[in-house]
Image (cartoon, rainbow, N blue to C red; front, side):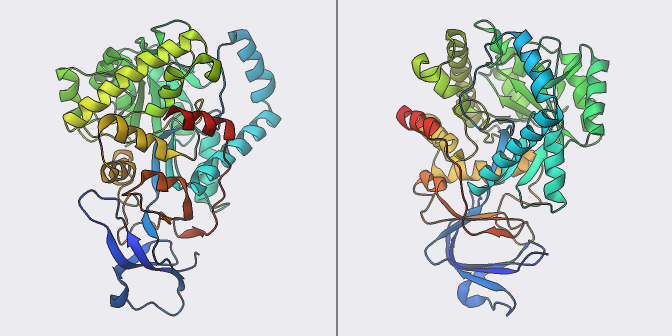
Length: 440
C-alpha cells in the first residue's frame, strides 16, 4: 500500500492538447496510487493522513511514455559489423549462459530504472532476449521493486536471414510457422507481438538492404489474426514504402520507423479494417537514425554501409512523418533507446527533433508523448493524462516544458502508480551526450 499524497500549488499540464495549463492546483493521490481528486488549492480540503508536498512554482504533467525502446543496451555506440560466426560464438558462450542471462537482466533493470528516473513512467519494449522483459515486468507488477509500467514483446518475429534473426528473433517462413511463433510468445506472457517486415540498418550487409521486403502479406496477416483474436496488438518494424504497404495490408496496429507514403498507404493508415482498432498508428524513431546518418564516421565509428542506410531510412522516415501530420494520421513517439546514441534518459531530444523538423509546437509533442502514446498502446484508461481515476504517473519540473522542451531533461521528482521518487538519479553517458550536443 502506497502513502497518500497531496501535491499542492502545482502548475498542472494535463497532457491533453485541448486543455490549457492550470495554476494553483492540488492533486490528491490515494493509497492505491490513483489520482483521487484535482482542484484549485482553495477548493480542496486535504485529509489529515495525507502527506502534503508543497510544489509552489513547479510544473506537473503526466509521465512520459516511450512507445518504442529496447532494454538490452543503454545507447553507447556498438557495431554489428562482425562475422555471424563470431556473433554465434558470443551468443552461445556468453549471452546464453546462466551468468550471461543474469548480467543481461541486471543491465535491463538498470536501463528501465534509468528511464524511470528521467521521467519515463511507461515504456513499450519491442524486442528482447530470452523473455527477460517479461520477468522484469512481472517483478515490477508483483511489487518486488518500484519500476516503470512495462509493455513487453519478448522475442521479435522474423524470417530466415531477416532483421534480428537468428539471435533476437523467432524465425518462421510461412503463415503457419508465423502463427506458431505468435503462440510461443503468448505462452511466455508477452503484451504485444513485434514483427520485422523489412530489413534494418543495424544488420544490413549492403546499401538498400535496410528496407528490403522480408515478410509476405500472408505471413503478416496470419500473425495479426493470431494476435488480434486474443486482443494483442502487432507492431511492425518497417523501413520502406513497400514494406509499409505489406504491413498495413496484413493488419498491423503500429508501423515502427516508417517511410514515405502514397495515397493507398495514407488511406490504409486511417482506415484499416484488419487492424485491432480499425486504424494503424505510426511510431517513427528519428533520433535513432539521425546521428549515424549525419555525423562523420570518424565520430560514430559506423561503416559506410550503415551510414548510407541510415541516411536513406532517415530521409524517408522524415518524409513519412510530415505526410502523417499533414494527413491527420495518428502518430506517437518512440526513441529506439538502446540503439547507438539513443539513451533511455533523453526523450526530450526526440520531441525536440519533431519540433525542429516537422514544425510542431511544445504542446503538440507533449500530447503525443503522453495522451496519444497511451491511446496507441491501449493503456489510455489508466495513464497518459492527469485525470481522476487514473494511475498517478507524474513528473515534476522546475521549468515549464510548454515553453522549453529541454525542461524535460531535468526532472525534480517522479511518481509511478503513486510511488514517489523524491530525488531521481540518472546515470548519464558523457561520450554520447557530447556527440548529440554537437549535432544541434
